[in-house]
Amino acid sequence: MLEAPWDSATLRHSFDPAMKNDVSQGTQVTGRLAFWSATVCAVAMLAVLVAGCGTSARRSSDPLFSFLQLNDTHVLAGTDRKGYEKANEKARWLVEAVASGGYFARPDFVVGTGDLIYGERIEALGPDLRLFNEMLRPWNVPFHPVVGNHEVIQQEGSRKHEQAYRETFGDDRVNYTFTHGGVLFIALNNSGACCVSPAVVKARNDWLRRELERAPGVPKIILCHIPLIPLREEAVLAKSFGFRSYMDRDGETLKIVEAHADSVIAVLSGHLHLTGVVQRKNIFHVSIAGTASFPCDYAFYSVFPDRIEVTVRQLPAKLVTPRTNIHGKPRYREDFVDGNHKTPWQYVAGRADERAFTIPLRSRIATHTTRKEP
Ligand SMILES: [Zn+2]
Image (cartoon, rainbow, N blue to C red; front, side, top):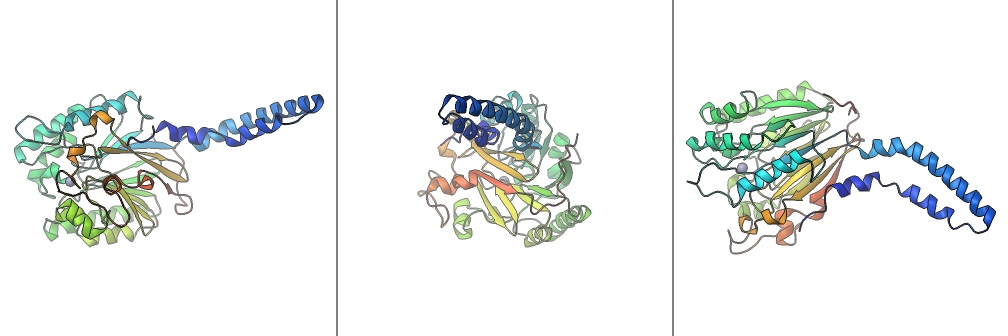
C-alpha cells in the first residue's frame, strides 16, 4: 500500500510530451532529402524547444516552496507508559528522511500539527517534549509546531499545562503566524476541542478573527490540531473515533474561517488518526493520519503560483503497524466504512484522490505572490 515515490510527481511535471511527439513525427518522413530536411528541422525545432522550454518547463515544474506536515507522532520518553508501537522509531525515521533529502525533495520547512508527544500526565509533558525536540536536531529546516491535546492534556488556555510546550518551542508558539512565499500561515491552538470554558474558546476565536482581518486578500493556510469539520460521515466517525473531539465542536471557529473563504486556502489538521480531505465553501479541510498509528502517514505540499500539490505518503513498510489502527480491528471487532469510503482501507487512509490531489489557486487568489521570502 506504499504510495509512489514523491519524485515521480516531480518527473511528471518536468516531462515534456510535446518534445517527444516532435521527434517521433520527424522520423516518420520518407525519402532522403525529406528525411534530412525533416531531421534538420526537427533538430532546429528541438533546439528551440529546449531553449524555450528549458526555462519555462523549469518554471512550471519547480514549486515556489514546499513543506512537510507531520502530526500525531506521539513520541514518548521512558518506559512507564504504553504508547503507540514503534512511535519513536517512526518519528526518528521521518526526521532523518527530511534531513538526508534521500526520500523526497528537501522541504523549506516542516509543520507539526499537534500530538507530537504522548504525554497524558503533566509530569511527562516536559520529558516527552524534550525528547521530541532532541529528535529534530538533525534538521536544518525551520519547524513550526501546533499545540495538540496531548501537549497540554486537553487543557487549552492553561498556562500550567502549556508550560512544558512553551519552554520547549518558545513562549510565542501557542497561537502565532508566519509568512512564507506570500502565504500567511496561522497556527491556531484548538486543542481543547469540546472541553474548555466559553472564555477560552472566546479568546481563541478573538485571536483568530483578528489575525484573519489583519491580512485581507492575503492567501492563508490555517494549521490546527483538531479538524473544524467531520472528515467522514459524522455518525460513523463519531463511532469509529470514539471521542467527542472528532471535530472542533465550537461552530464559531469554523464560521470565522468561512467568513474569509476568499483568502483561506486550506485548514490542515491531524488528531483523527485517519487521512482525508473535504472541500467546503472553497476551503480544503485536510487531516493527515500521522505516523504513530496505521496507516502511518505524513504529507508533502508543493506550492506553485497557481496550485498546491499535496501528496500523502506512508512510512516504509517496516514501520507500518496495522495493529495501531484506531478505526477498526483490533480496537473494534469490525472495521468501518462510510458512503464515500467503501473499504476499511479507504476509510482510514482515504481514497486515492484524498492521498494525492491538487488545490487550485489561480482563480481564487488574485493576489498570490510568486516572491520567495527569505
Ligand atoms: Zn489529538
